[in-house]
Length: 243
Image (cartoon, rainbow, N blue to C red; front, side, top):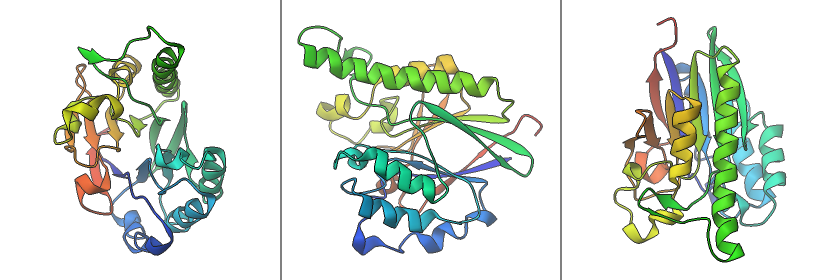
């Protein structure tokens, strides 16, 4: 079995430095990879990114991350991503990474994603230019995720995981106010996951949501926002091709 540790929405700032490091240092004994599902900082500053970097550097397992909306707030996401990469993390946006553990190849396709809502209650690419761009941005994120998953299909992976910040399904938003669902995710991400192919989808963002969900195509979805899972990370077990 392949062991996937995941957490999102850790929202680290100066006073939280060192709080996750002791837990992360236990990962080699219980997980093969750590996935970070965005909102790693509070305001997206390089100083906060450096705190996250110290938490994840040299923890003994590969780290794969996407950024969240908080990580964009200071309008320096490239700097945030560069700091995390310097600490050894794979930071994805419409890209894929393959990491190895005990001979298994774990493929991760990632995007932050964006809002727009879900089938029957979703935004459309119609009307004012700003509304069109809102939906087009979500579509670009979903297209990047789909392309990354298809790329993994050609890279001989034992498992393929879709990593996003925004949710691909409404299931894992249960507990959040219905009025804000359109700002928490988009069905376009689920379409990308189902057509691109994945064994698991992991996201964050919905602090008051629910852990378990599923796409219409049968892909398991897990909301790993830290307020939802209530711990430093949660570990999911996936069968590899040879299990």
